[in-house]
Amino acid sequence: MDQLSVVRLILVYFIYGLAFYTLGLAVAMEAGHASRSRLVWAMWPLAAFGIAHGLHEWLELFEHYLWFLKGWTPPIWLSWGRVFLLAFSFASLLAFGVRMLPPASMRPWDVWIGLGVLGFYGVGVFFMGLKLNEDMQGWLLAADAWTRYILGIPGSLLTAAALFRQRRLLLQTGSSRFANDMFGAAISFALYGLVGQLFVHASPIFPSTYINQELFFRWVGVPIQVFRAVLAVFMAVFLIRALRIFEEERQNRLDEAEQQAREAIARRDQLRGELLYRVVTAQEDERARLARELHDDTLQVLTALSTGLMGAAKTAETEPGKLVEQLILLSSISSQAIIELRRMIQDLRPSVLDDMGLKAALHWLAERMAAQYGYRVSIDIQSVSCRLPQSIETTVFRIVQEAFTNAARHAKATEVHLFLNCQPDSITVIIRDNGIGFDPEILKAPKTSQHGWGLIGMKERTELAGGEFQIESAPGQGTTLRFYLPLIVPLTSQEPTA
Image (cartoon, rainbow, N blue to C red; front, side):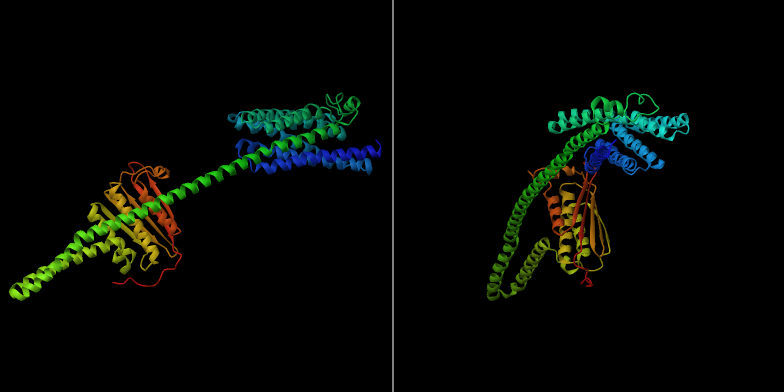
């Protein structure tokens, strides 16, 4: 073989190895992003095949360089290393086909099938060494041919069959563009196995004594390495093009996630608008209630006081003896007015929350709710010996107040338990009742009634304070509310005042 032919052959080996190495890297990069577990399970062996086979071809290129251009005989360990690398690459290709082709129910047998083939291959190499005795070069050629016959041809054909199967699946999903690329890759692998691995170096084992590289060259006029290199390029191009389906899948998933995010934002905005409407309506209802109470109770009492005072002035002129009795009555009326005003003030914002702090306010609220609704309330408050930021105390109090009200009006509970734990950087509250419970999924549905607005309001209060709100409930199993609030402002050292 002249030097120019050797250089051309070396260039063929380089392109041959580069095509497989590129294929292996591309498959490895896509394997980490594949969404189908079966493909992920199988693609790593295919990536190992591409990288190992590319390295094998470059190693054979190096051997040819040493032999033809430098006149050096490659060391025996280098030649055996190349054969073992070839065996590893084809074993990985066989693993890809075994993993992809059978049904998923046969997956536990994958390992045993692979081990059986490798065991048969290893026994064959061992007995070749015994038969050929000290003919090390003959043993190397026989091992190379045996590797291609036992591992290369079955692995290539199984891979081609698996790619044909994937093509049918892609056609069923309407991905005809990727199916065509998969078809091209399958044909390339089939030809690579049936032709590329059948014509091997002439060796002592059958049929390489007759069907070998020299016969292919006489028939076709080009070395078998050129044919393999062309198929390697086709395999790499078609398979890398087919792998773009994962990029399309990722884009589809991103589009779906973006659409879901837009829908969630739209639902949240709609919910906030509806909640704002409910808040404004509740404010107007509360103002109307206060106006009625002021008109029906306080205004009437003040009118009575005014009338009584005018009568007392006349009585002082005409009947001074009845003045004391009339003033006592007026004092009683004024005391009643004071009681009613204090009740309304407590409803608006209890003074105990500002004066005594959150712990005292929660005990006061529990006693009032128990007296008003008739259920039992137990409280477990830990580590609240100092004042919290006013906004946090108000948020916790209002959420607990709404939870206690819901437990009576909606849950029909007979027992309510409140647990509060305050740490230096956070406060955690758990409210549990033994009521009728409900399915929390109904809170995700559009709001068409009053049901759920209290819980949504509590969640909104929590999130506005930078916290997290959770609901656990089921029909007939009661309801548990948990919320966590961060204490952005450090606790003060101020002691509760009387």
